[in-house]
Amino acid sequence: MFEITEKKHLILILKIFSIMCILAIVTCLIIDIAANRGLTWSPCVMFSILFAWLAALPALILKNRKFIMFMALVSILTLPYLLGISVLLGGNWFGPVGMPIGSIGVAVMWLVYFVIHYLRVNPWYKAAVIVLIGNICNAAATMIINIYTRNNILRISDIISLIAVTAVTVLLFIIGSGKIPGKKEDMPVIDVEAVLLEDSETEKKEE
Image (tube, rainbow, N blue to C red):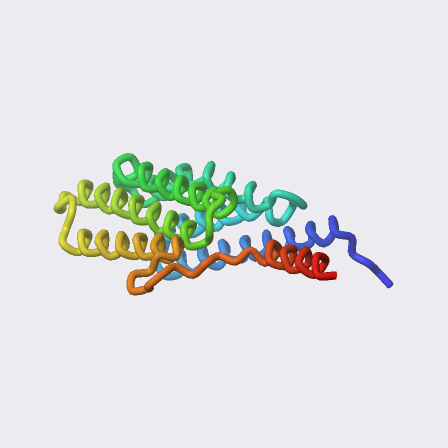
């Protein structure tokens, strides 16, 4: 029976994915030209598909460390992608908005990755830290947009959202510590191995 090796399998997936991307680009071009008698929105879609194709390459061609390479490529390509979209759409939003918010997004991605994989605390604390990071970065992005659009730096809705997410963060820290208000005492942490060892030693002494 004909067998497909792992390398051939990956090459086949890459070819299929590439063909799908090309078909999507061609379809968008045809629709855009037919509907608008020229290129209007389709270049942005083409640029986005190219970005997705490049970012997906590590998962398609590498055997190890796929996710790290995917994150690295996304980090490298994000700002050029936003710059390209800015040029295609026109306007001067890349410098004051696209660059800082894109950088914040990349930073959040890496911070969350390191919290999940390298922070040696219980999952509740990890969740609290991730929510806190998201809260801070969301507030920073909101301020950047408000400054660019000349709105108030902090609106009432932004303040309410900030308070709500801060409350969630505090609640996660409290649950993680086991000190839930209303409980008379914290649940004791039982070392099962120590208990079994103690029982075993007791039995030996009785014998």
